[in-house]
Length: 87
Image (cartoon, rainbow, N blue to C red; front, side, top):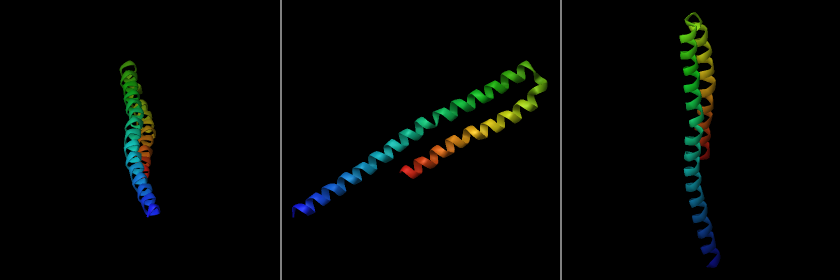
């Protein structure tokens, strides 16, 4: 009888650990999404400043901005994939 009770307690503890891991994964992704958000803001603010200072370079700056934007967004996508793998 005691072995059955121990097995039930172990199963309940494991189920609680999975619930905690899902919550921690959500918090981790939320914190991980802050970095790309700040990065995108900095990228496009630099493009706006550069275009205001030198309007003829706007095309070159926008090309660079979209390239770096894609790289930064890949980090956010990796974070959401890791969130789903953890939960």
